[in-house]
Amino acid sequence: MGSPTKPETNSPTLIRGMGLGGATALNMIDMIGVGPFITMPLVVAAMGGPQALLGWIAGALFAMCDGLVWAELGAAMPGSGGSYQFLRESYGPKKLGRLISFLFIWQLSFSAPLSIASGSIGLAEYAAYYWQSLKTVYAHHDAVLHLPWAGDLQASWIVTPGTSLAVASCLFTVFLLYRNITFIARLSKVLWLGVMGTMAWIIFAGLTHFNAARAFDFPPGAFALNHAFRIGLGSAMAIAAYDYWGYGNICFLGDEIEDPGKNIPRALLLSILFVACLYIVMNICILAVVPWREMVQAVHNNDKLYVVSVFMERIYGAWAGRLVTALVMWTAFASVFSLMLGYSRVPYAAAKDGNYFRAFAKVHPVHRFPSVSLAALGVVAAAFCFLRLQDAIAALVVIRIIVQFLVQALGLIVLRIRRPDLPRPFRMWLYPLPSLLASAGFIFILFSRENWQKEVRYAFVILLTGTIIYMIRAWKDSEWPFERSADEVVSAGS
Image (tube, rainbow, N blue to C red; front, top):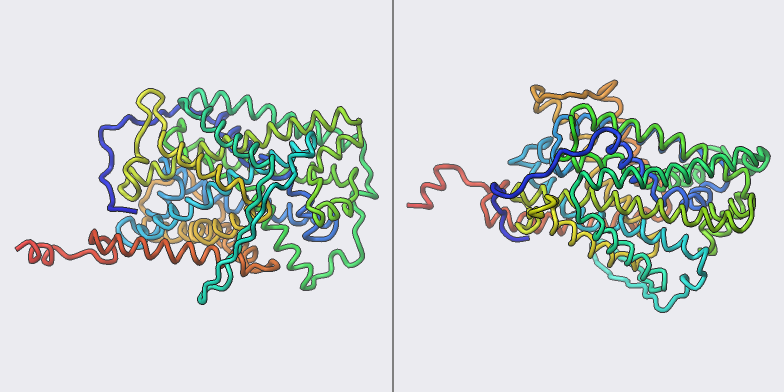
């Protein structure tokens, strides 16, 4: 990682050019993306029937609890970097917080490109509705690395024509984002209109062709509270968590939000509320038209996951299937756009703080955005487009939970104890209950799934290697936990 750099003092600053409307729109297109359109069959298969709606409902309650964590921290520390700042200040900027915030940046090198790549892969999956040849497999490889202390680490790479489309969407997003934040705010509203129009059409079509018997065709024992139900709910919540995530994206842009003490909490909570309502209603509508057993079969065959296209085709005909596919691809691209915008600000904030490569602190001299950080993120995300969608989502969820979300939810309580004097424009409702419920939900998702050990191994290896890198650098530069007292510095100098 290299020695820490000094904060940039003469570089251009960012622009506070995004109000409540733009912030809420950006959050919503980040949250919706392609996730609910392509993961719905995965959630239904995980629980084995329409009771999968419990996963979406539990995910919504869970997102609201964690959203309150982000809202308080984002209003109190409205700068670029989001979780980087929150973790550093919660656990002590010159003590444990320096290690934890570094580990957050380290895992972000993997999780942020995975998140962006999953949206691009989803876009390519829907494009296969038009061109089935996009799913032609040219090459694939299953790599296994055996580590005596961690078990087997597995990764599957695949090359198809769809892979090229996913990579192109990443690179085109970088091209669009090479502009200032006021233009981005206007563009995000245009993308938001497309996303909302898509959701509205799907819900209208479902409600006007609603078949309650099909929507609520629960299999025998659907709600039996046994081991299979717990495992299914854990898997469903993991996927739902992926679909709801994005509500914290606005915190990564804190330096570019107008009146952040008010607008960050409002944008966060409004976007979660609106998106939760849309998800639940949309899923019921689709289940009322497309039999859930058909969705499960599609998952088992890893084919025809474009369930919304099938849904519209059955109601209105082929033209509707083609049109909604284009709209879902628009939605997927909007999510990639929003994710890349938000995540590109995190390495920038760490570099300004002296905790990452100096180059990432560079700001475009005209449009005033972190140009190096944005370009690097786009290139790595393009490389991750060669992963399978299910593998990318599973690895992303576990890594983010362990290294970011869990320690952040608990960190809010730590910060309340450490810094009671910190100005808090927004204070969590019913403190500390939402923080504790969010933490419990994260733990449930981690350990209530089949083969949970596989993804936990990935997170463990990332944590271990990041800690080793930090400790070597901290020892070299006399930072925590190897900092020297003033007397030791004087003695060394003499």
